[in-house]
Length: 422
Ligand code: FES
Ligand SMILES: [Fe+2]
Image (tube, rainbow, N blue to C red):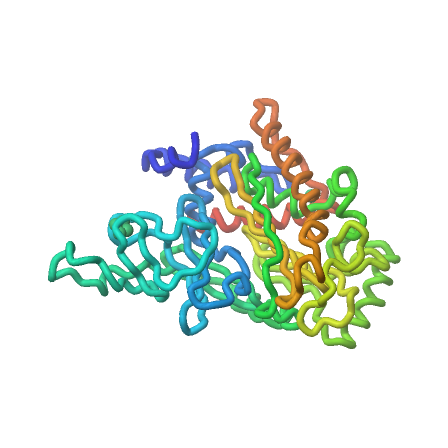
């Protein structure tokens, strides 16, 4: 079944899937992987879309991707095309990318620049605030343009991050507190004066939860990620049960220097399962950034950063993003489900706005470590999916020492679904 078939699932079948999902989550063995259906069933995938991706705040991109009026990029949240656009007064808005005439997608490109938004089908034209400006004379004299503006999605920005929600109501919770922290922790980077250096879109034949689970642990790192481990320390933060004394000493040493420069680093987290989490961690001793050799990725440092050894500030936002903020470039990751067993993972690398490609940075060098890591993770995720699809699969135990991040993620997922289906 592909994603378009999901439209045709009968309502009754969907209700059954919801009831079954609720039972599976209520009776699941804590700290064990989920029942196979939660990773591969198209009906349950549709529930994931309705209850998570069509309700929650999702990370979509950075404000510096659309610096000027009329700049836009598009995302597909399952079957929902969304348009993120900078308008004339400088604000960032999100709209459903679906025409109010007969529903055609309006912006068909991945990113671009427009004066107005013109639907390719019959040329209905909207301004940058989504107001319908023109619908031709064919609609008759009584036609009310005002009633046919583009539908808005909820959109919030903080520290250069753009989040959208396509729910009917704005999600509740402590999201604003997290945004305030994000604003504070991102201040040294001056995101408005950065630019997208390079991006990748990786298609993975695995359920989105397997992609997230894989990201939430580094148990697999030593077996799979030689490039990443040139620079990354596997510890999650200073509370990591595996953290060695050497690591704690390194953190103390670097944190003192960060404090001197007013670079935030302390762990802060919000929500069940550490849903929103931010912490700065040192990279390996002597290493500057996540390049193959640990040396600079860009000659110009970001914002007001002076110290090349800023480690990596890791930002987690469930359900769909993790990030690495370093001294001379930062990397953001976005996960968007396509179907029960297909996911798109987008990675973007940002540098200082004035950095010159080929002079100050080489995009190939910047992306090398995470291109390799993403590809290794894709294979792991796809193999995981194939094994789970087997009649021989049964949920297996997570290590509390090595896989606590996965346990946290599933706690958040499970609580979210159960309370939404209550
Ligand atoms: S569907 Fe957009 S103008 Fe007709
Ligand atoms: Fe990995």
